[in-house]
Length: 194
Image (tube, rainbow, N blue to C red; front, side, top):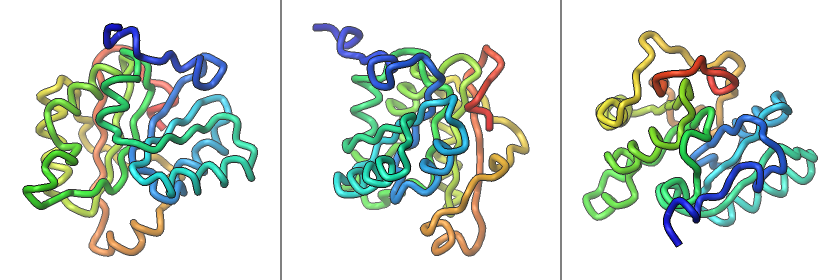
């Protein structure tokens, strides 16, 4: 079976062809749950490394009866590379990713060229990647690898209006949040440009 045959169409995940937004590392799911409730005409998919956190979010999804939200536990780099179809994601949301600063953690970092290439491959034309961090150097590292992958930074980008702040952001970003957004060339954007 080739890699392309292993990719799963979003219509099989959600049962419809609505635009899909992916959050990587949703933590407790505050942003994801708010976005899914506010935009029922879009689908939201989260990839959470910790199985317990993913299960806790799914309990909230069930309690709120959000039919447009799915959560999977696993390594985002692997899931995106192997399962997400080409040009199929309207937006990626990466908020306060772990910097994994130690050399032994290098394999877990999202700021590597192969991950940036997979994001560029899977973003729909005009699709966007939203990034927020309390660490400026992390945003700068993402900027370098995303530009090399062909994504275009949006100058003067500001966080989407109504973006809730998470408990993590309130605790750790006391000195401020660094926000950036990149777009895959082509298309006109869409729900991912929120």
